[in-house]
Length: 145
Image (cartoon, rainbow, N blue to C red; front, side):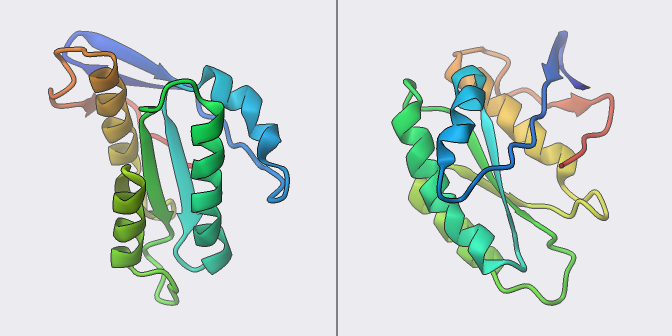
């Protein structure tokens, strides 16, 4: 578990790597019932993982009672030279889905913390917390699984 601090508020993040069957997304339902925010990750060198994002987002929208569940779309492995998904394609997809977007490198750690800072800000905005626009400082590094 990682702890993030915003002003005098702390946030304990529970991270769940939810492996799923591409044909049966219902295995995600237990996670969605408890989720206050989601990070959807695809690999910039894998067209199949990118194509799955729309399907997963549709499923999430059908399952969640809140139509405004904060979601961050993450393009992982942006450090690779053999990418097949451009930054612009990821950004366009996020815009079309109405969600935030960021590219990261789990290998180098680039933007890994930023993903969770963005997600926490969005969760706080959803809860109408006045601290939502404040700077987020990380006291412990994050890991993307």
